[in-house]
Image (tube, rainbow, N blue to C red):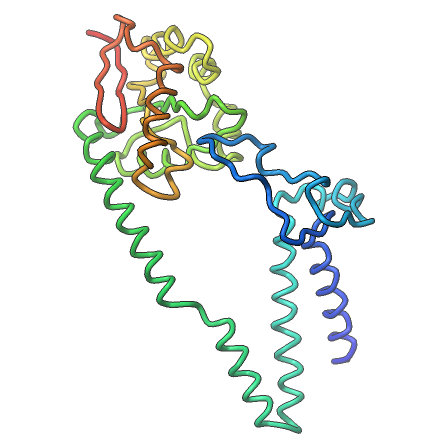
Length: 280
């Protein structure tokens, strides 16, 4: 029975490993370096012309339900690693019966190999904490002076003129201000949220008549205030503060999403955001 189980695990592991390669084999193949602030879905894709070898089972990723819907094919490698750990444990336990010293040495080598780099992990966590505290100082605390708990906010983000959206930082900002927001992080979450947005909130995000849409949304009490961030709600979630080049580009981009000379609005300008409300 043990041999049957191991055979099954071996076959499953090999299949998972092969599937993790994707429809093409990549050997030192990389996409061209991206220099822009906003990305489209096509920027994440690698064409078959850029890969070393095309595999004959490409149809699996296009035709078989479940596999065809996977966005990150490399995650099959997790199943392979999980099976590898189980197989290694079984083989080492069998080896221990005949060669205990060799089994212990191999176990120690495996343990050392998979043990996390504590120093690197500590440095990453410390930098993330520093970034978080700086973000609170630069964005959260200044916003508290103008946004009241319980208010409904809409983030009109310049980078979302792209063909997809992911307002990661909206979650953190809204939670810390104790406010309601139409925006949220995660493309699937955003798709669900958008299906419940009022008409003027939806059309505002289309960036065609955003000033008129903003006026109607505020007048209809669909939203209490509109925030235009001078940073990316998505890309600046990875590191803070934004680079000087990225910040300057965002300042230029925001001019394309709202007419700040519109006299119907009261606008508060701060370094990392603008707050828009109706004039009394």
